[in-house]
Amino acid sequence: MDKEKWIKEVDSIEVPKEAVFQAISQGIKQAEKPRRKKRMIIGALTAAAATLIIGSGFVSPTANQVLAKTPILGELYKKFDDKLGMKLAEEDMVTNLNETITKNGVTLKVTSAYFDGFQVTIVGEVYKKGKWPANEPDEISFDMNFENYKGDADPWINMKSESFNQIKDGFEFHWTMNYPYDDIKENMVLPVTIHYINGVKGDWKFSVPVEQREFTEIDFAHKEAFEYGSYIETKRILEGPETPILIYSIANPDENNKVYLSKAVDDKGNELFTGIDSFLVDDSSEDAIETFTSQLNNLDKKAKSITFYPVLDRSEDTLYHDMSESGFVLASKRTDLALHVNSVKQEKDKLILDYNVTGTLDKASRTDLVNNLGYDLTLVDKRHVKDIDEDNPFPPEGHSVSRNKLKILDREKLHFQSIFDLNGEEKIEDFKLTETVLSINFSMYFDSVKLEPFTVELRK
Image 1 (cartoon, helix red, strand yellow):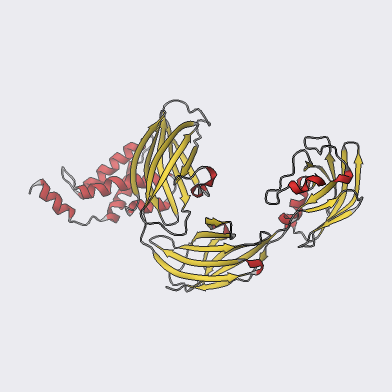
Image 2 (cartoon, one colour; image 1 turned 90 degrees about the vertical axis):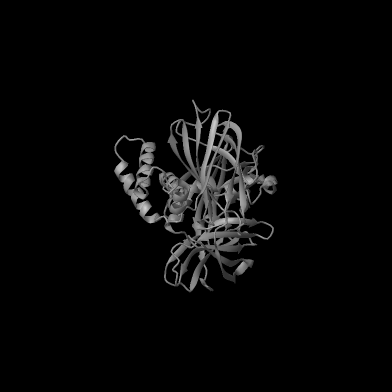
């Protein structure tokens, strides 16, 4: 039989992947001996696996592709404890890139990438002979953007995670980015531009194919309305080879009343996600609508519905009161919390406040209050209160004092004394007690309110 015909015959044979991977795993265990270099293990492993399948002087290209790509990629993802990457590498569902770019003495090698419908993961290596101009010897940093965005406006870098392994003359890197759209674009190519690597400027540019996987779209449309114009709208579930993905939106037109999901549970009792596991993919500030994705971990295949547990976070605007009075009360409009000022005294360049805090506070909030009162109270020149942006409430420089020396007079009764240094680092120019107000915002001590759960049927 000639070589060409032999290859054709071998290619027609289905390669038993699971057996190959078991043999590879066994080969790794046998090859892992003390002080042996990893590249030697990989080389010995590939050769051993080839011998197991075909005891011949030449190997089918099809079999060779399975053997050559899978162990190396799997080992690379294993270094970063990326179990999904390891699984996809075994299933030959990782995009092999192997693109190398060198700029200003720094070489970037992009090895591979995968997209699971929820996150895009890219792995690779970076090398440089000699010392880096920035960071410690065991640190690496990238200044980068995706899809031709610039700076912090890039939605891909929101919730981006990264990890590194130090190797000779460089690092191996592992980046994971949340997919920032609620619709999966077909045949998308993701441009990546790195502006700096450890202080070295270069503009390393490459593109990653974000390949669309096979997804079944489950209609999951439901809208649950709440007070203050808020609502939660579940849209659809994308069911692919891996974990199903829920896409939903939350509208909060009143900034002082924000609804969010604390958790989701299927009708079999499996907790699918908590609020911290939801990732923002779209923010339409004009309509105060945010769209999120969440992986539905542990969703039972026989589940018929999912119950969601919404929570309301309340807040209120900062409270102000004229300091010309010797005693006054700053009372929350939404809770029973209040600041009772017993006396106001000015002694040269010191302003001394004696006060009590009253209202309902749990143990943790009481502790937070005591720890924060040195910063929670602010003296402001009343003529500059209008200069404070409630969304970004930094006190106006030169017209405010936001720190004080706190004395605890009675911890149980929440009785305190705050001493403001009027001639310190922060000061109010031409300070006059009659032209000054005291401010506090109690919002951080408000408890979240659990709202009624709601259930959505799974329509398969």
